[in-house]
Image: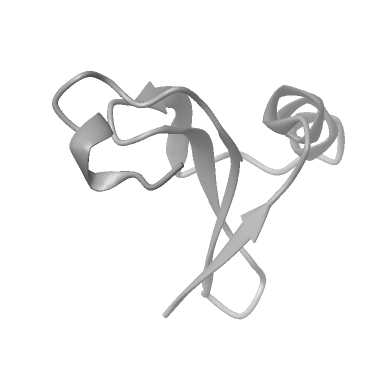
Length: 66
């Protein structure tokens, strides 16, 4: 199971995650579908996906509503 957490500044959250001693299991990166995110396992083994919105690439823009 994965929980998704939308945050204002994923880079700030990434720094806080690293400072807490956790190691992301999915490295932070920009995705063409319009987000920048990372994944980390919580102590119960659940994946936490933390992300911020980004401009989607041209191939994904037709799937977004204004």
